[in-house]
Length: 548
Image (cartoon, rainbow, N blue to C red; front, side):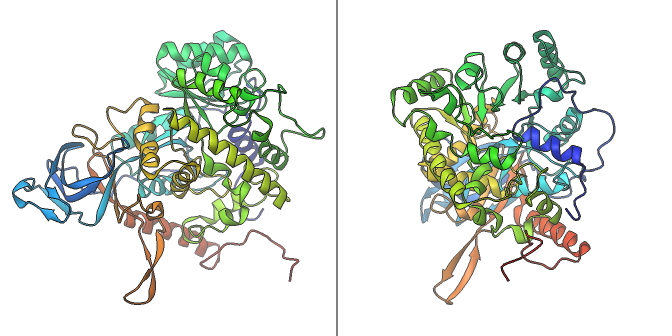
């Protein structure tokens, strides 16, 4: 593939990690050597100040409560100091106003939400197959309101991600604060084939600044359960992509019984609800390493499990609820499988997707998530039904008090950083969540899963000053949160206007102009296109067109 600066080894490793990792006996990547992708020091952002006043605010606090306002929100340093009611809508009592601040913003006509929590991220770099600067990703995330992110595994050494976590948490660079969940198999530079080595890996991860562990791939049963036990003893949180190699002995019922805190995607959940089989009904010629075959068959899995509302469906849900188990569905990660055209031609690709990332997305036998070798209408129809059943479970789980979060898993399958997060919010809405429930999933629920609900996830005095500021009402239209906004007819001029896009993201009391961050990203993309002598606008997928 032209202009693709990756090695076959990197491509195959990315393929394995993001879907079904290789056997845990394989040696982990080396931790030696610098990463040639420096992230520049922070030069954007206003504050923090001793006293910032956001005036005439309508806000949604993240708990599920309806919008409230008007209020003045006072920020002191990195914390919300006061939320002061100043009257009623359209009737402001000046006598109730907060005293003057060192810095003030009039937010009349804006909504303020808690900073978003993305529970499934991968920070890629110039050394990954995506071949994009980490700074590009960090700014896409922050400009879409993501102030806290859980990184659930990287091909890079733990120390690389730990350094970024520390720098971002100190606000030395532009980006979300991070929770670090390295891949289980990447912790040690030796195979993990026995329970004692698994316990050692957990202790080593804790020593190297991990907040939790992401399990993925073919892990022997005794090794997995020993690692989960040790993680719980150490206070490390855990999540898992239940790969097809192990769901026969480690579905979500079994892993959650051994202390697993949450799951990514949905693998391992349908398998726990089988009533007339123990493994998925694979075609006789099925080979797991064929990505188109694997993803096509994944789209036929939910119809093989218990019916919605059935006794088995309810029993599995009951057990997961008792264990306070959390779901991070990442609906958006699979959206291209049910509508290739919609995702591959999304409006934001033209100005926000780097050509090097576009190379990664194109159909390829080696790049993970590029399995469009011969994707058919029938495969899309199967995926539409898969979504219907999957969404039903997730919505039922939420309705019964279960924790459901917003995770984007961007950087694969035409799923762009930042934009994919807002798509995930829309997909939760499609699943049956109300707009307020979507915001709750994106904020307080995510904070709870990370164990940080006493710091972030809600707008409340004493909490971190992490805020999303958008002009207009996102409860009425979540599309206002996309970096590309949405279109609206101006009846006075008769012209169609593009409106919306998050205006400001506040993290730790520092106010970032999200529009300027997105302008910087557009410049990065335009620069790379110019270097490749590519015109502005849509990028081609095919190299040969036989329809003309």
